Length: 245
Image (tube, rainbow, N blue to C red; front, side):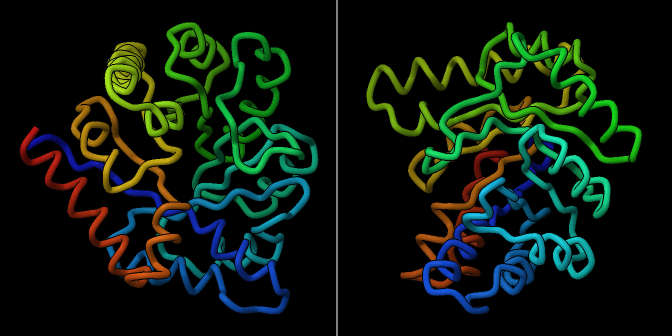
């Protein structure tokens, strides 16, 4: 059996449903508690600049009420840095962010943004926050992540999940190769974006991956089967992948 693969559950879209009508229901912090009961190793939440789903109050509550590591996804901006330094989550994952996008469309271009990103990595790390960079499965970006001083990377799996046939196989190999290269560089390697029951097994079996972050699919499945059930099934699939290799 390979090492355990951690599951981080992203609760953003519980907040999306709440915000569609306003008010307090459904509560993403309640969802976080249910995720922990169902086997989540950590909770991920993306505080966007436009606050389209997760709110500042959500982050404050998650930081104090959840007994699992909180991974704060955030853009590399002064406002988000100050929020992270105030709440001191376990980890901060720096992600690209455009106001017009529906969801994160790709990885950070760390290779071109080293000078911009380095002060954020340094400030977060100095505060004891573990920094991750959300990047494409590209050796150039991995080299840049190492150069900028981030100890963790998260590989974008969106293109793999959307592809079919030979193209999906090619993109899977790209993720696998990038994860192995990250491990050789001494970087802890995570992966996420778009993963579902149908796409998670080939990713979960990659031995160099330490953690998967999954959210939108689990919240969508919860409409039909309940949040705990959707997370337990995903957890079981990931564990099966590690047992069988």
